[in-house]
Image 1 (cartoon, rainbow, N blue to C red):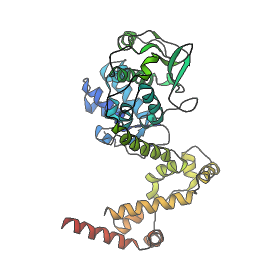
Image 2 (tube, rainbow, N blue to C red):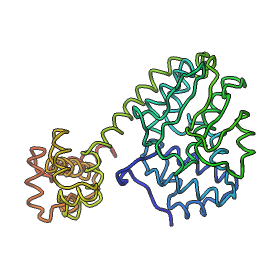
Image 3 (tube, one colour):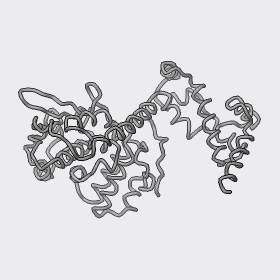
Image 4 (tube, rainbow, N blue to C red):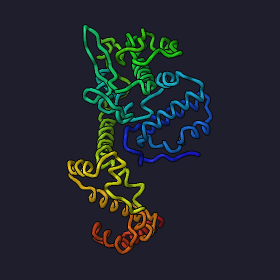
Length: 355
């Protein structure tokens, strides 16, 4: 059974669908059967066509672990990281490739990295920090509780190494520190990083050659920088909005909107809040639960009718009205005209396009 993933995911950290698709294609390319992988993960490749779609982080964990089992490859995260091209999986890859230097790329990766994968990080919230001490420069991964899923550390460090080597096969990682224990596939660390590796360390970090940080990058034409950065900024703003209290409420309301059972206390419970806490969070964003619900119903009703996907009566049901007359009154309040006119206009527009 293949489950189609939508943006109606539970609250919590997410990853870009492009990253999941890249990992699944890598696993299949190494010999796993597509159907078996999709069955184990409960997700199909076809559901991940839009690389900017947000998918729960736990799905990434499931795919990684399923791939390790199907391929009998405990070092899968390292192998994926050393070959993955982030530019084909996410706008983040294009943004970093149009950077002026590795230092610039790291700064951009921190700003836009959550578009690829959201993580819970210490400090100022950035995933990576450049720590300079005693003449050394360490790129430190600030993710909290990294040993819960060390595969993300492995794939990220291998990915950084692979990206850096595209600038030239000059050793720039001088040492590797990871907090997890030494695995049975230690030899793969030595082969990939070609530098001393310390396990059970107090940090996840790469010791970098300081001179490498200012090396000019010429992978992509500089004019592309403004184009891809503008798109990344828009996606980042959308992600921030989705992570707001309002965005979380909307995600939880959508799948149950048609039931009409959309009380604030129910949604608050799904978010792990009391009704009072949810009210406080929404008020801080300048909106009430009733306003979020009303505007979501308005938006979805106009979407259904303009797309000719449902009749007026069906649309009323889909947005949670048991009484079509009450829906008609609400729609007129939202738009200034009854829903039948909106549907009629959509049908006439369709006929005009066909002609």
